[in-house]
Image (cartoon, rainbow, N blue to C red; front, side, top):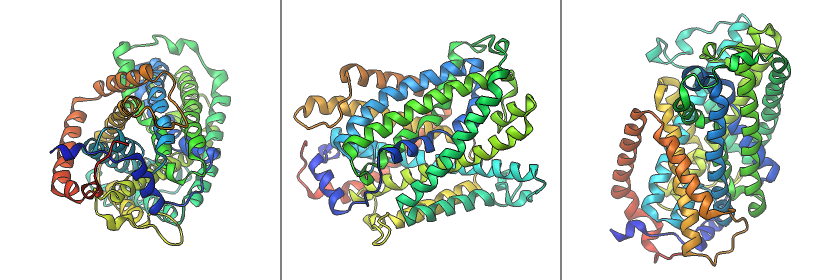
Length: 465
């Protein structure tokens, strides 16, 4: 049983990436925009209003600060690990090197759920915005093909189509996907700034009183819910293997995208709750609703278009991250190696990209997501906690390793990352914890039934580096 804690040496991880690696096409700007592509989307266009109405009130601004701080601590730890181990897999790969195989498996297993459920939920949200925009233009699509069976339809066809389209794009190549991401990021940032320019002068500070109508516990609960809005910087780390200069570019991409998006979130939350009472924001399009409420119907349409662009980039990056975690785990033998093949022309893991895309399309097309999307939050927070512990452990066990980026004040930052992310996990609903433990238990069954015996490390002598 001691073999379950075998660690994969950093030199072995790097050798595996070199022998079965991905094409290096990304720079620092690509990574920052990749992070913004995944962070700015559902969170800013949907969750901001919902969390304000149901949990935090105008205190949603403080919720974003709380979540942002937790992410900042985790991001600094991620940046050190990403520069130290610049290969695909993010928290899964880091944990394999620092804490051992079974912990890495649990992290990877939960990252798979995070990206799969998150992608499906975002695809369903994309469908809702598109159907709504078409309806505003006088084009009404039949409910049978825009709703899941549980909601009275046959299939949510727009959600299926967008998932399959982005899967094909990801198969064609990372650079092509990043180019689309850049265009859509510009569109959605323009939409955000249009909102701020139109709504900013209309802020009524009376709407900010009371600041915390549900108390600080409401602010904390809001922070736990909106954490979904921040998971994009984790997806940046999954791109490590495709960076031209990962030692420099990864820390810039991770920290840079987080800083930009945190500032935008806080400002948008303040303006949104300042122009309309927070009680009116519990709807699928709170930003567009706020503009309509103050008389800017054309601005509302523009922001709605930007929201579709924003949600598209979130889905693109989530599906990208999902396939890279699968790729890293299959390369290690923990899931069947056949899906690890890299396309000879496009340089992408095409098989798992296609399989994962079909799975996301089916879940989004036929399953009501509901509260299961909260599993995305708990899986991500768990990965952040383990990564922060991994940084601290490697500093103690391997102080000799060359670290291109060093987390400042690691003895303070790492514990703060664990405590802050753990606090957000504590504030998630009880049902989310039950599902988390059930999914993790299923993962342990899979590990002992297949992964332990087929692991590449079962054929290697475990080492500590």
